[in-house]
Image (cartoon, rainbow, N blue to C red; front, side, top):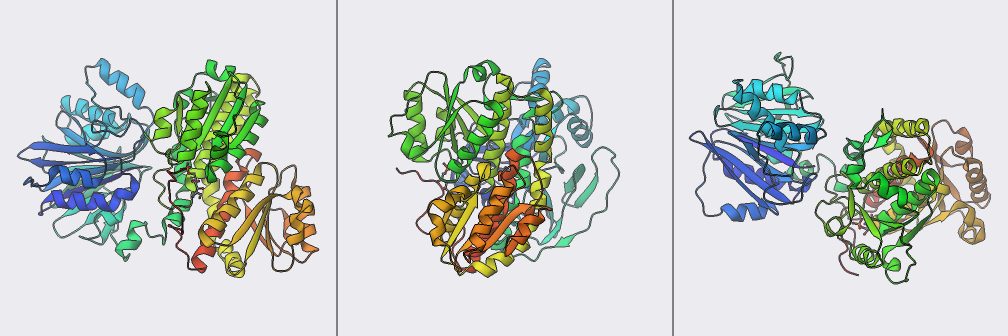
Length: 610
Ligand code: M6R
């Protein structure tokens, strides 16, 4: 996830681009750059680091231009560095991109054979070279761009300028956000409205497969392939600037919860081949031979990432039949673990900078284990030091409470478990295809699950005065009970406990009275009937049951005072779907209790101390 901005108009583009990038910095902040046109020459200025570093690097220079592009990067391909920062250039073509190009490797190899020289490790640079190669064949800027994009697979929102046709900027989108701003004699492109809200509130939202040509006279839009002109409606935005930074959401946490369908799509894109029943192991920087040798797995993490690790154990042991141990990172490093030679240690970390996790990772490497990091931040310490990395493409997570990072970690663990099971011969190809088919439907099912928001809000209104809360789950959803309780404690400061439902009768049942809300996770799996019995046990002691169940499970409804129903998926993916109402519940309770949702007391997004 990155932020792009473009300006064409009568004022100096440089401060407009820098201001716009600052408003987009929440989308990525590991490198930044701008490009601007003067006398048919494009100047590119880039640097690793934040927008502030870019701004400092051009301070005092009298830069002026009326057309330019800007980019703030969240690295996906290639570490954060000046060479990998956008804008990218090929000949006189300069481009910024947000998205992921799935077939960049093949395109790059092909272009290299034709003599193109690449200067970055990014997927983006291939689009630039492709457009340039078609313009060298005599096509106009517009036609070269249309032709180039026919060869590109994946998601993109791009802004392009060309020294040969300096009066215009082109913008195209497919599956990545892009908005156009219409001012008085000035026009903008951006990943998000706040980037230009200071200058105009009038916007056009292009659809996938539309190309916009922007000059200082106006904007014209046409079908990318059909070339047919498209009439678009202009919308007037009424957001306040603060709301706009959060894309219209009140808090980053809520925005990030709603970003999950996109985050999961980006995390699975290009990482498996459903027709062949194969996981793309390059993306794990692993070889099938290496996987085959693995006979023991340790999953190590902190907080919410540790909950993902617990779920990973259920997935790996069930699918691949390889024994797993799960450790809290701060325990692993001091407990003198016995790590056999054929072990793989999987560390899971959103930030890649959690001190306990890094220390555990180093300890594992000292003990001779190979480490795979499942990590969200490219170039972070965990990612750099690990032997193999799987990046979750959830984009920057700003809210302290981890949401989309968690569900993309689960998605990564699901893919890893399939890959391991395949290497070990533990799953048949038909079974693998079924698992892939369910994974392909996951973003849509998450989208559907998010429609539960209003029902969750009603539950929150009923219970936000509670002093304590109990979450019960079984099997692969027991860690979701832990996750629901952690989120409630973390952002609403209500004491909560997560328990394996079968353990309730061994102690916590003594806590139940008519002041104790009990949330029971009841998907229709092999332990459904068991959890129904646990719900009965709560009812008969006066507790209030909130059931979270699979659509159509009427038996859950009769045993609960409140019920929330979710779309059906396979056993391994239920934790992804069932975490959604729990994250929403914690969110609404925190808002109703007037807590600081995005920055809860005493906490930090990345815990870099022991
Ligand atoms: O960046 P990490 O995934 O390593 O962070 C681990 C925990 O600090 C983190 O998950 C924490 O528990 C969250 N605030 C929970 O929402």
